[in-house]
Image (cartoon, rainbow, N blue to C red; front, side):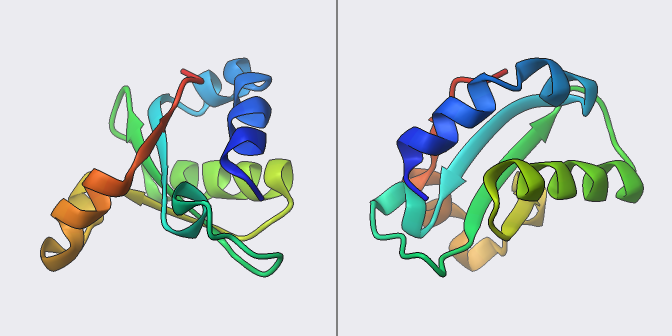
Length: 98
């Protein structure tokens, strides 16, 4: 999947993302670098407008997987490994969806 496709899909589903409490989404990894293949997953960084529990987090992940048709690795900034945090944040491409 290409970044342009991700932008388009998420922009078309702003209302649903809002229902999940999404404040912002960003893509990192192979899709952000333009190196994705057919088997690539979609690495996404999410920020919520309010604290969410595990079940809501999983519902959002499932929604994103169903929407994009690929496996989504969804993380919050706090969950990023400290050794990878800076490089991941530099690589992030914000999605103008929320």
